[in-house]
Image 1 (spheres, helix red, strand yellow):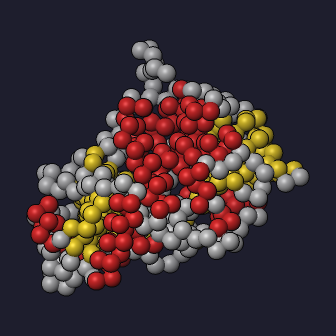
Image 2 (cartoon, protein in one colour; image 1 turned 135 degrees about the vertical axis):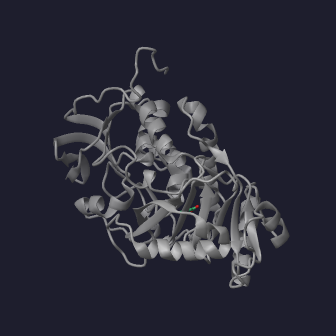
Image 3 (cartoon, rainbow, N blue to C red; image 1 turned 60 degrees about the vertical axis):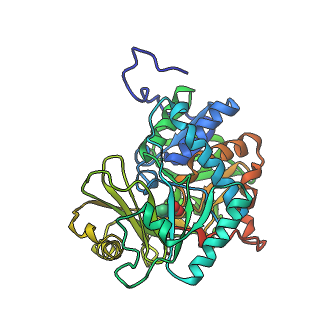
Length: 404
Ligand code: PYC
């Protein structure tokens, strides 16, 4: 596909909504767009509609802190996220669109003996799978991040870190836009401001979705809605262990480039990188109470900036420019839920908690395979919903950058 010279729009004109599609994808974020893209590109399935209640990438895709990494704790997680990272590296070329993919190196700081133990554990699992991760000492960190106070204001001295050289950041909107444009150019339809209010079945098989623009027949329905997952699964009486917590983030005013690494401290509940615009992009833990809301709070910025000043004292002089929140669908084992369900023709891509952006390419690719073949892709078998009933959890809490 090539954009024609006389086509000035980034996205082609929206087509009228049809009454029937082979596949309906609910959710026009990065995952939904990536699934549509790979359905069309790799499986030749183009009679696809992506239905989005708001606008493309307006949910968690446009609200995360853009970190890409594969330094997970379980073999299942490492293999999955590493394939994602590899796809990310080629996306700008694939899309003919700059996603500003920038490899930075990723430090996860340890301030306690037990955190050091977890970093060693992760490093060993990572190395076993050929992932570039190693435990580094305080002098190495200080050399790479000279402006960081290694004593953390004398309160929680840094003891070492897990260093993951491939850790990167990317322009999150561009990822959704690139997938959306690539899918549309191959025949997929994207319908924004189209809300699904029910999913209809007949004899245990999906037959279509009810929307605020009418009923749409579909052979397959894929839910890729992150923080709205319970609203969708309730329609089919599918039970998941997902709970929704807000996750907030903010950026400072832009300053000259000084920080080329990503720094995470799980103990201090801080992660920070500097964007290509010069802003410090920062986040902390999920909010303390379950809540289906994207409101911002003063508590969050006060807590985050307090911890930031322990790590980077000079940030006391920076202004916070913007603050926002997303809704994280958290699972008990901090791993996603992906694949087929007990309802024939209904597929679930959920449980993306605070780790969804980095999975965008591989979740799209593996879900497209799963829908096209009606059998789960090898990489996502460990993430099936029935693992909770079978006590086969994939414990990733030790690899979540975010405090919970
Ligand atoms: O898992 O890398 C991560 C992350 C950073 C911010 C939220 N999640």
